[in-house]
Length: 318
Image 1: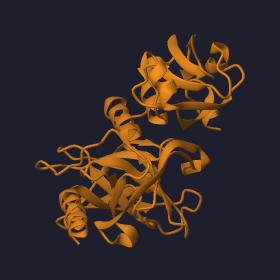
Image 2: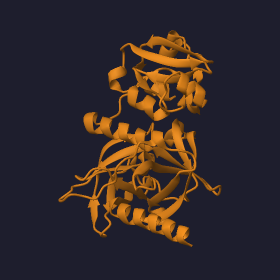
Image 3: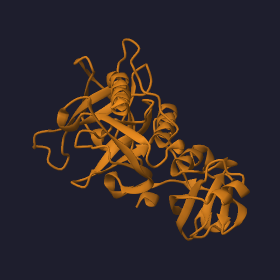
């Protein structure tokens, strides 16, 4: 029984610490195709990521909303502004008028996640604010059909139960740090997904700096892959993970550099690519139209080349 009591105490402590930073979001959305129709109500979750009122949620929760109301843990409500919206990762950043310092959640390094790690979700399913559920990290590096049909790569899979309204809330580790942003549920299957915290960190920094996310594109379809421990050791990789190339677009920067399907990308711009989130971070606006070095494994051999990424456009999304 001591193990059960200890686990119960740990989960309760995490929920108690995280609860004051988690928000219930209500939205009002008009249908431009039917201007005479009454506005539709929607909802979801969000959480503070800075003490001065910056909060993170899902793009699909607030996209094209005409008004966003956020309920704070003390029951008070405030209107929120959208600082930036990134449908490509289903993330959006909100700003609330913070009269005082707000409790907030620290974003963990999602590259350190392991399958089997404990996961705790907090949110407002069906409008029931600050509901807590728990489970484990079931898988890493999943691909998810996101908002508008575009794929979101490198997604966390969890069996921590989620329901409509959990979207935008935090997925926490055992230390109470956010490892992801809950985003989707496979209805009736007990399979749930969250966008990794490292992707969220990149999106937040880009939106706070530029008001939007500008991306460079290599021209690959990829997924995360584990490497044999010996291969990682032989090539000096701190983390035995890389990005497996599934497809290479003809005429793309990756094609010109010599990448092929089956290659495992392990470094970009001199930094390791252990996850799709690393690619997001390294292929930011500063990589558009400039030469960047790629390193990949083809079989047991490491290869290097230089590529010149282009800027992400609607054509790439299509």
